[in-house]
Length: 378
Image 1 (tube, rainbow, N blue to C red):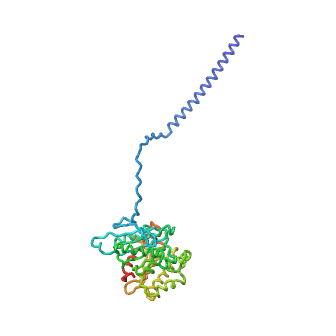
Image 2: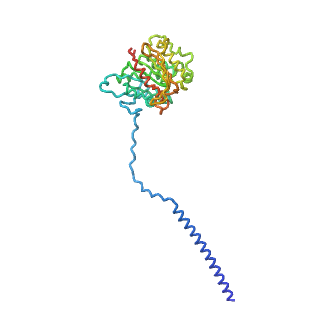
């Protein structure tokens, strides 16, 4: 009996030992596999970045003061911003470019070109786009850039369609007063003050030239609407698209037939592909200036300039019609093929500028340089 129990006990111990041995082997196998996987994973893992050094205290950068309005290009001479305050309390900012001159030229009064920007443009944008300052440095004249206030119009549009402005008040009076003050303060040549603008700026330039003719020697209108046929915003949009209709001649009747109006030389540039201010406006503006200058019966001298698509100075084809008294053009009409609502020959990186010529700024100055206002300002 005892022997049988011992035999059973031995068999039981043997079975237990075998079972434990199997468990031990199994556990060792699993552990080995896990260790192998961990080693492989560690070997394949990318190296950890070195720990960053503790941050060291540094001095805070000093905030630089806001830079003044930079000139559109690095030019000799001066580029300054200022403000004009009218007697009625109205204020308007402007930029002024004065070219660098030699000692011999310093005592000669400079001519002045007044440049009126279009909607959504600033005065520095307009200077850069037209490159008028570069031309002023080469030719020797000052350039004044009035700027519309955002508080007056959110898009910086001149409100040329307002009846008060068209009658010579409002913004027309404000800019005219600014021009008079700048000319007197700087000793500029009052007989050679020229006015130019694009779009809404052209509309305001036309009003100032017609309402203050003794202060302006000549005017340049680029892509501008017809004069005097709209007195509210909706009518202005209508005129820009379809012209002034039957009111074109009536708008200048008093100026043409009232007597006492001096000649106002005008150069009128427009793109045939302009969809903002349609080309019909150029035709009607030309009719108005021919009438007020008393030369509506003159035949123009027409010059056709072909397109130049390649080369350093590409240009659209354009046609110029000059209405001359003697050898001097009094009204010059320049119609540019393919040009949309943009300054011809301007800086194409800016909106409302076409880098393809002809160079509108050069055409304007070539026309202006032929004219001066000899009669004193009343």
